[in-house]
Image (cartoon, rainbow, N blue to C red; front, side, top):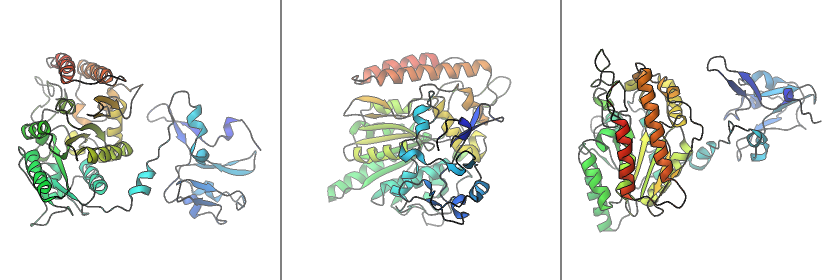
Length: 437
C-alpha cells in the first residue's frame, strides 16, 4: 500500500531547539545496528556490500522490538501498512536527495573508505601521547595507511614529532623509516634522500609532515627551494595556525584577530593584527605538480587528494595544506573537533580546492555555494571569543574577497599564471593589512 501522507515518510523532521532550524530523524545505517541485533525473526540485517541495514518483509513478524531499540528513532511503525519502515537508501539513488530543493541532503559514502582500505596496515603504533581530540593523529594514521610502507617520513619539530614519531627511549612510533630534521631543512633533507634512492634504482615515496612553522615560517626557504627544483616528494603542512607544541605562539598562518600567547587580548591589543599567509597559493606559484587544501572532516576528499599527490610526487613536488584545528591551543572542547573543521569549510574560511599543474587550473573539490556567515565558525573557537563586530566584519570581508579570487582561477578554460596569482594576492593583502580594530 502506498500513501503520500508525509506523516508516514521514512524520514522525519523535528525542531532543533538547541541550534535552531530542524534535524533529521532517519536510519543511520549503523555499523552494529541494534535493531538487527534485537530482531527475533532475523528480518533485519546489514549488507556487507552496500552497508545498508535491510528489512525483509517476508521474515518480519511485526513485533516492533526494532522500533524500541533504535537510539535514533530511525525505524518506525506505519499504521497504514501495518509494518515497520526505515530508510533503505532507495537502491543507492535516494529520492529525498533528488527532491530537496535547497540541497540540504546529499549522499555520503564515507563507509566506502573503510570497505576499500580498512584492511590496510596502520603504520603508526597505538598509544601515542597526543592531546585529547588531536587532529594530527587522524592525519598521520590515515595518510600512512593510504600511502603504504614504501615511504620515508620526515617530521620536523612540532606536534607530530612531539607526540610519537620521534619516540621515547630510542623507539619510534612509526613502522616506516622516519627522521627528525630541523625546522629549516625538512624539504632539502627529503630531496637528498630521494635522489639517493633514485641513484640506486628504488622508487620510494618521500613524505613530510610539517606544521605551519616548519612550512610557512622558518621552513619556507627549504620548501620553496625544493618546490622550485621540482623535487620528488609529498609535503603535507598541518596548519594548526600557530606554534602549538611550544606554547601557542602566533605564526604567519595565524588568522586575523586570533588570540595566541604572543598576540594577547587586552586593552590595547585585540589578537593578531595581520591576516594569514596564503601558503597554498604561494605553492601554486612555485609550479608544483599538485597543490591541494584539505580537512579531516571530509575524509573522502582527503583520500582522493592523497592518491593524486602520490602520483604527482613521481614527477615533482606535491603539496597538501591541511586545516588542523587544535582543541588545546584554540580553546574548544575535543568533542567539537570535527564540527569545528566542518564549519570552517561551510563558512568558506577554509575552501577545499586542488591545482594540477598539467591542467593549469584550480578546481573546487567541495564548493560551498551558500556559505554560512563566518561567525558560525568563529563562535565555536575560544581564541576568537573576544572579537568585536568590526573585527568579525573584517574577517568576513577578507573571506569573501579570497573566495572571489579563487573562483576567478577556477573558471573553465582559464590557465593560471604566476603573474595573475601575484596580482590577485596583492589585492587580498590590500584588504587584509588593515589596522587592528
